[in-house]
Length: 73
Image (cartoon, rainbow, N blue to C red; front, side, top):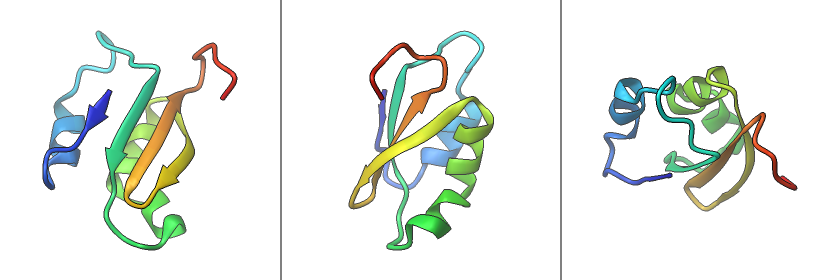
């Protein structure tokens, strides 16, 4: 799932039904140039609490994978 909603990413995630839908990969924008700081953002904290882990980033797009997803990541 790719979320790019011009600054409303957190609002979308907070309303997303993670019990009903469990995407294997979530690509989402987290603005800022400090990866460590961005991992403490509300967006990252929410995804980490939902069982996702960060596997990479490209500029401001961060890629989170569901922990139990069967993949090589």
